[in-house]
Amino acid sequence: MNRARSTVSTPRPALLVVVLVLLGGLVWGVASALAASPSAAGSPSGNVTLNLGWVEEPDNLNVFIGYADTSYEIWALNYSYLFGSGDHNQPILDLAADFPTQQNGGISPDGKVWTIKIRSGVKFQDGTPLTASDVAFTYNYVIKNQMANLLNNVQGMEKVTAVDPTTVQFTCAHPMATGYMEAQSVPILPEHIWKNVSPNAAVTSYGNKPPIIGSGPFQTVEFNKGTSVKMVRNPYYYGKTPTISTIYFGMYQNADTMVADLRAGRIDGAWGIPPAGFGQLKSAQGIQTAAYPYYQWSYLEFNCYDQPTSMGNPILRDYKFRQAINYALDKQRLVNLAYNGLASPATTILPPNTWSNPDYHWQPPANVAYTFDLAKAGQMLTAAGYPLKNSVRVDKQGKPISLRLYAATADAQGQAIVKLIAGWLQQLGLNVKLAIIDDGTLINDIYNYKGNNPAPNFDMVVWWWYGWFDPGQTMNALMTSQIGNLNEPYWSNAEYDKLGGAQVAATDPQQRQTIVFQMQQLMYQQSPWIPLTYPDTLEAWNTAKWTGWARQFNGTGGAWELEGNIYSYLNLRPQTATSSSGGSSSTASTVAIIVIVVIVVAGIAVVVVRRRRRQVEDEV
Image 1: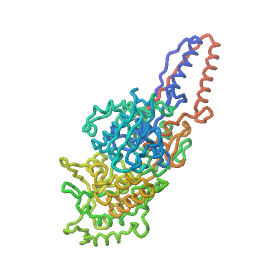
Image 2: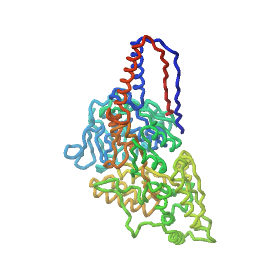
Image 3: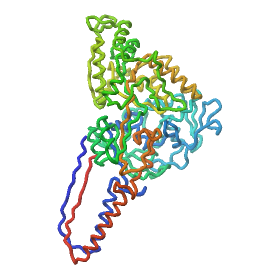
Image 4: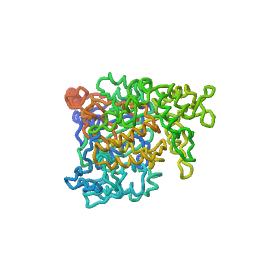
């Protein structure tokens, strides 16, 4: 979307003014202009606005319906969670007042009961007190009603009880891994509002329209679809009071326009920057850029559903066919051409250099690693029962194999990837029908239903995903229980399911790492998803106007749009008087000049003043 920027000058008639009137009017006018300035310096009680741009807008602000990464960013600011996310995925206290341990009585000896103290005196954004009852209500709402969007965050939990206003108790079916419990991303909902929303409405029709009531540092007060989200500072917030009073998240249809607006100072940060635009920003004065891996991967996905309602090509249910396709993918070439080198070849859905103590990324050894080898891919297809006949690859019934390959219109890199993949598969004798379809249609095809039964209507899809902060939650997205929800490839494997349950219950981190490694090995061998690349997240922000940007990963990662790490929003403030960006110092100079002019003019009996007002409007 292009943001219109118009300047309107309105001449005023000549006025005879008395000195005091002129002085008062000018000072008032300057004060008003400063108050309206989007990035004006000010105290927490003033008007300080942060303007951010992205190319993917929230799809739905109902936590039981939305799935876009940007929706999660809004929720992270609007709601409280028991635990937040610190640097390198280290849990930090949010609504919880302490980390439960067996030493302080927070974890029962058998590891099945967790007792967590929450902060006292917390209020929702409508002034209603937040107590342990709200926490228990939220979790039980998810557990009892099997609310798909958050179900992956409550695995193993049976019930949650409010012991007293500041104590909540989790009863689990088995011992729970500490990392899993403290990485649960469940926004705490106000019981007085959500108790009136039926579970069916919550997952289908409840719009959760602004103002959205939570207890986070900012409240969503406007959501203009296709344009912007507006959030304002929560006066009841229990944590650090942000200097920022208002945040605008602006939606861009055109990423190049977003880059231009950041360079021109019309927005303060940009996320989802195209690789070409990123190069322009790296050399721009007063702008900081970051290219970093962040729990994400691009993938080639197969329709593995083995039920009669599946509308995918049944050959994709054969893992030997999928194994062969691994050898037809030149991942380094994808990195070079689709991402301008701002990515790395992928192996599993847990990126490297993301977790520490322990590192949960399993790297396949050289003797089992898939490499780009079209000849080997062809040999494996033939050995699996899919031979070439007159240069055409046929199935086990002797019929030519035809496969649909989709990418999303909003995924520019995915569109480049599918063209390369289609070319390689065609060299194997496969007939590939390539299509670029809009995101909504693609989601509908993946989650298609016939009556009450899943009927996925695709063969192969290239897209990308963000995982969870907890590696086990990411791996468990492909359990059989997640078919029709998070399990996009509709893959079912009994051994994988068993391992998924075991890693959630593994209280020893090293033991858990071993199980998570086994899950990655099994997925690598079965290949329902073929991870293609680990794309760098490309982000930039203005350092000339703002100070306090808090970067993750020891200062090498991103500063915002981190879906849980909200330090920048809490710490940001306009540059100080010594700033060269025109902060409070330049403002004071402007006022002083105006006053001097007024005094000079006062020496004259009367003066003819021609006033002009400049109004700048940015579409948000």
